[in-house]
Amino acid sequence: MARSLSTSERTLHRKLKIACGESPKSFIDRIRVETARTLLETSEKPVKELAASAGFIDEASFRRAFRRYAGMAPSAYRVWARAKAQDKAQIFSVKKSEIIPEILTTILDTCVNGITLTDPDLEDAPIVYVNKRFEEITGYEPREILGRNCRFLQGQDRDQEGLQRLRESIRSRQPVEVTLRNYRKDGVLFHNKLNITPLFDEQGTLIYFLGVQYDVTEQVRAEAEIGDLRARLKAIA
Ligand SMILES: Cc1cc2nc3c(=O)[nH]c(=O)nc-3n(C[C@H](O)[C@H](O)[C@H](O)COP(=O)(O)O)c2cc1C
Image (tube, rainbow, N blue to C red; front, side):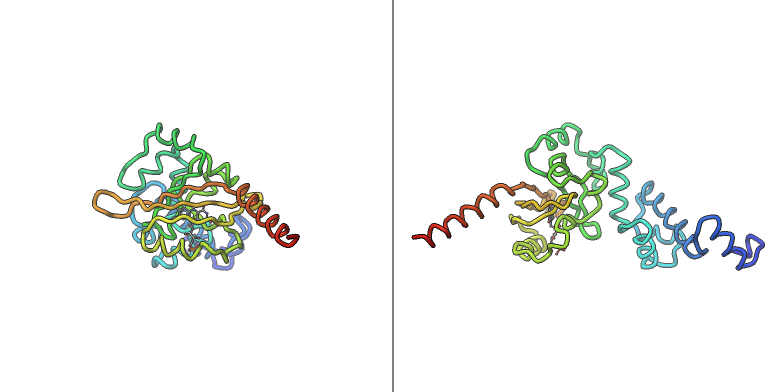
């Protein structure tokens, strides 16, 4: 790089530091990641091919640099960027060129339950669709949700009874219902009765997982209170 600019390496380091506070190495990585971002947003090329087009020597170094600068995996970024750039309904074009009609997303938005779709074909099965109710229950905006795995709602509370059953059902592509402790954006706990159904196409290929989230915090509290009262009555009796 120094040679192409007819300068010394030392001067290049110094001038880049002044201009953008970076070393040549991190400058180059950042520019490559920016190129990759544009390619992810504008082309259908698989991630593997994008690594070379953006100037990375291999896929692993591309994924590492991308995560460092963009804060998420390349495939998740593609989902997130599309959802951000286009109407939310258009994110369904990611798969099979199908678009959920506007009228259907309007119907889903009026549901009393949270609704999510996750894509099992993408790295770490990110969320590719959420309805309005899910935003209300969790307090997060779509741009903070799309492209992430739903587990972020568990925060640090990862030792939960229903999780093993949930993992096994997802692995074996079976429907499942569990109640999990989840945390809103403001950190407040809510009890999430989560129903997951695998969605298959006509050939029996798994396309999405459908998640229906129901906030049962009040019920869980009431049950705990009843349990407590029962125990006290028993003690008195
Ligand atoms: C469609 C779908 C929706 C999900 N919704 C939630 C959710 O609302 N809250 C949650 O804590 N986990 C949710 N999960 C579960 C997590 O994504 C993940 O599968 C779970 O934490 C177990 O996997 P892990 O051990 O890799 O975290 C959902 C999973 C799927 C497939």
